[in-house]
Length: 418
Ligand SMILES: NC(=O)c1ccc[n+]([C@@H]2O[C@H](COP(=O)([O-])OP(=O)(O)OC[C@H]3O[C@@H](n4cnc5c(N)ncnc54)[C@H](O)[C@@H]3O)[C@@H](O)[C@H]2O)c1
Image (cartoon, rainbow, N blue to C red; front, side, top):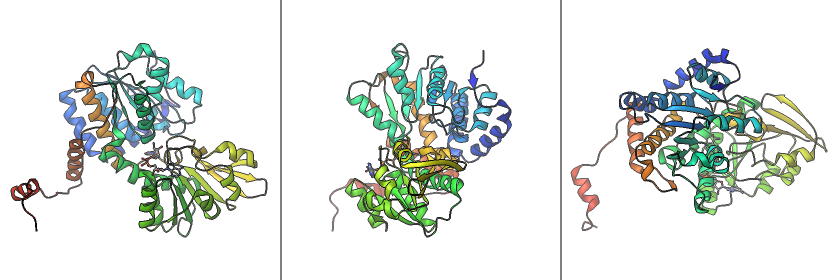
């Protein structure tokens, strides 16, 4: 019986090349894979994964299998699956249900298929898989040792579940590790969101007023990369300290009601719904470009946009032109879904190297000791960050200093002062 559903198996060869390219850029994960081949830390584990099917994810999947696990995979966003990569994974025997452009119904069908082999571990990006297990499959919960979560929005959902006493097994918040949140969300989302905007529009960023909704980890990365390309960056925030950081970085800060009037390009990065709504679309300039890089497609209220528009057409791939009743045109990229994954390739491999090394180590921890954990959201130990960053630096050919014995003594003493 077939254990996959992908767009076209004939794409496997192109997918294999993409994966090999990613492998050549992911030395930390590849080091862990080589170690795991002999140690087999995931032997006997059945891992259901729901995470964007990109070339980097394929490197993680291959690593999980090399470590002894059986794997069944689905994508975590209807528009983020790379069909070539999905075909390559299916061709090498991975159970995978994913294709680009699936409907919401198909999205959940794919998740259901990955649960058929009764997983012992789950891996999420946005918590849709865990949510499905919790809401529809009580019979599976006893057999699941634990799970991991990749992104900010998923961790928020899981903490809310744990707070309400609804979480049925322990979960590691991979997102919250320093080597994930401070690198992937900042540098990965920063570069790849710009990449998505440019692929969908090919506009010049220099001289544009570039509005970033939310100056958190992702917003900070996007703002800095847009500024680096010569855009005039404006940030919107609800948190005073985040807004102040944006100001001191040299960006203008104002409410979205003001920014809506002056922006040429808008990107939302908050993880919160309704950042751009009808009253903003009413104020925008003719030609404004709007997109989102937060996890769900709720940050731009597309319903409001549809109501205000008299017509729409696809003017380029991942770029829809909405014509307002007064003739102004607003361009929505990637249907309001994560622009970096839907209109480009997602984060560069180099940054996913550390994120997925964290994923891999979190799953190994669960396989070893997960049964001893409580049903709550755990963070990974900070020593893991130092270990991974150390390996990363070494693979980049860089060395750093170490504390001398005198320095260690100095740091642990309280008697020495002025
Ligand atoms: N595109 C990707 O590949 C990618 C990668 C990582 C994370 N994400 C997603 O991006 C989103 C943001 O993640 P993060 O790690 O930057 O989170 P974060 O918590 O670091 O930052 C979010 C920021 O948005 C601000 N904010 C909240 N509501 C706001 C509002 N109404 N107006 C303006 N600002 C508001 C918060 O104060 C915060 O500073 C999440 O949904 C996350 O899952 C996407």
